[in-house]
Amino acid sequence: MMKDASNLASRLRRSLDADDAVALLRGAIGRNSITGNEANFVAYLNEQMRARALTAIETADFLPGRPNIWGERRGNGGGKRLLFIGHTDTVHVDGWAEHWAGTAHADPFAAPVIDGQIWGRGAGDLKAGICTALAALSLLDKAGIRLAGDVAFAFVGDEESGQPGTGVSAGIKDYVARIEAGAIPKPDFTVYVEPTQLSVYSAQIGFFIADITVTGKSAYFGVPELGKDALKASHAIMSALWNHSDAVAARAEHDLIGRGFLLITGLKGGGFIAVPEECTLSLIRKLLPGESLDTAAAEMEAVIHGAVSDPDIRIDISYPAGRDHPLGGTAAEIDRHAPEVAMLSKAVADAMQGRGVIEGAPFWSESPFFVNQLGTPAVYCAPGDIRNCHTYEERVDVEEYLAGIVAFASFIAEYCGVIE
View (cartoon, one colour):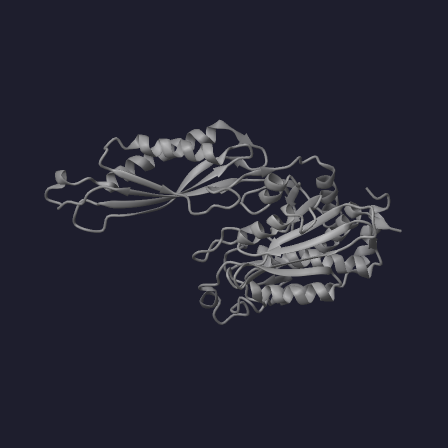
């Protein structure tokens, strides 16, 4: 750790160009990049990355017309390689304009600054994080700080799952494959810029989603004994699954991300004056670090099949949300006491009082591609509050955003090393 870290932070605060930083984020929000339309935002990032003197900038489609972009600032030798990564796509804006009709918030891409907060779709999830990382590099340049190690940036698509046929992490799968093939250098440490209110998340949940179709046999309501009631079978399945969820929760508690569980999220069936022939259920299972997706899914399937004894009731189970695993997304955790984690935590705390706390992510995002697949330690850290993301209230506090820039710049300098 640098001996004059506190002096560096003060130097960076004095050098920060707040107007440039705010303009960068407002411009990013202004580029509609709802999942599938990532190219619109990537074009803006290409301009900004070149303007901020990044080199080795490349774009490549992970699916037709849907590009990733990455680039780097090479150090002057001897330091480590740090990666900042985030997703370029956002969720939809359906209903936003109607919700805010007649107010300054009505355009989800106008990025108004209201009462010290920047509003708009993608403000927190996660364009503030992307812009924090890029502005941090510009801040180091303005402060005249030269790096020994490399700092890399990668912005990938297809993380959000709100649009049909999307949200399977196609962007990061392509990017990580390039690292595995040796086309892109492997980082020593990764910061994924999901919104954390500038906490440092060293652990995250895993998950799978299951869609269950229960098929019986329809019959006229007057002679129900001729049918096989799919809705009744589904009731038995749900009761068994709720009991299973309680058992899962009782097994263990992780001090950063709580307990595992299973949540039934949807039920559809019936609707005719007859014995219901088909019923569908949807659920999501939360996993803790160390839990196997395969084992958890097998346990759930055994519970489902065990709840229905009638051989004439057919049960089909599918897993529509494969990420870094065919069934879903794995949980991930790194050593919360690792030097890099402590270094980032301190840089954030020095930049904004009360921030930089080491916590766990109550969401799933793409750090397991690094932690579990590449063996590269990764954390989440960025401005923004996950509780208002994906809502009509999405916004980022300007003070928090600017503090994040100073924090990231301090961390880059300490982690990568500085050429005096």
